[in-house]
Image 1 (cartoon, rainbow, N blue to C red):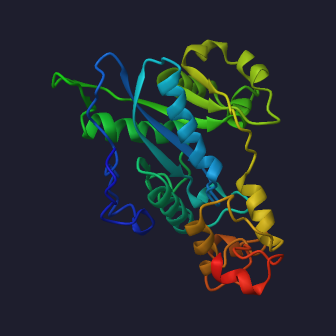
Image 2 (tube, rainbow, N blue to C red):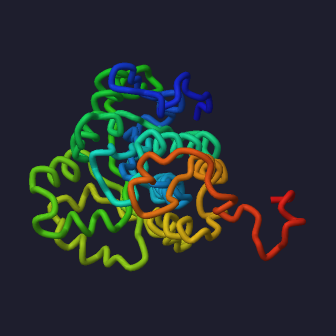
Length: 289
């Protein structure tokens, strides 16, 4: 897939200068028998972790090795807007930039879309998927097959098992949204320790043909919540989140406490809080970190 970088940072975009990222989106198929697929991960990403990134790789392996009907053409991270008002939510500008750093420096096919994050109101997941459907199939015209014909790209939600668990809980999601997300688009779900995915799926049988469960062969339960906790305690998060994201957090003093400072805090942090040089090694080893 293409590896060129976007001409404008997503964190600098507003509703007036927004442009849809396509610099790594492959819109030409190699297998005409497959359905072209683009995966969308929605979430807070405060901050983004290696598990967020690994979910895309696990999904890519699932598509490739499980004889699915799909050919994967791209993947997008879509951070939620500030109006989500979740505890520990850094500003959208910070979260977009952290996602961008992670995608640009650890992947050659993932992209970050700012549309959801810069909206003046909270956007439900169903509308976010509609946005990608419009941009990829409406504006860009879908994917081109080897014979030159064009076909619509399947847009699908990529999420952890905790999301599917909320979807199966009565009253959390409207029936209309469930039918829109699971019926029209479908979802790829990555198993997560501590979540009974079979129980959750039992209540979603109406959409079972569009729910694809991805097994975690190597268990990873790192979460943004745990990362924020480690940072507040001045513990190391090295090898849990990408190094450029650690550096960005340090430079901007993010997640130093539980309150609003994480939503817009700027300025240098107090020392090397994230433990890029382990204190157990000693100061003399810090130059090798």
